[in-house]
Length: 126
Image 1 (cartoon, rainbow, N blue to C red):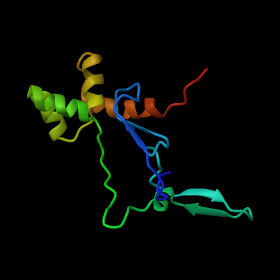
Image 2 (cartoon, rainbow, N blue to C red):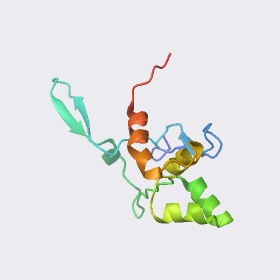
Image 3 (cartoon, rainbow, N blue to C red):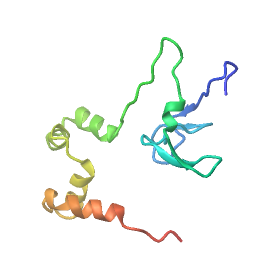
Image 4 (tube, one colour):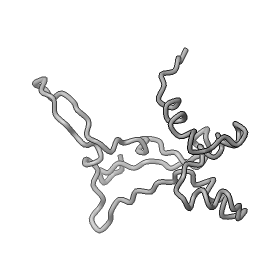
């Protein structure tokens, strides 16, 4: 916490093993968008929105940015790869394209439900 009573985070361009930008002390990147259900001191369930606890300084506002697949979008732009550019222009998921290529050009549209199912399956962690 800063001297003025505000929470400050540290941005780290090399802090995540994935190569993505990370924040620490505290990590403010994973605050849920939706309300969380918690129990108050009487045991009653109440819904709170954690993000509503953060207020921008007078004259400023918070800006949200989604850098989803940014590295691949930059790659498509720099290389002018027609297939990648078309895929992003159509707002399709790049992971689906990569899976399609890895599986020998399987029809991309048929992968979507399979990929979503595989992402949500329980996995053994030990």
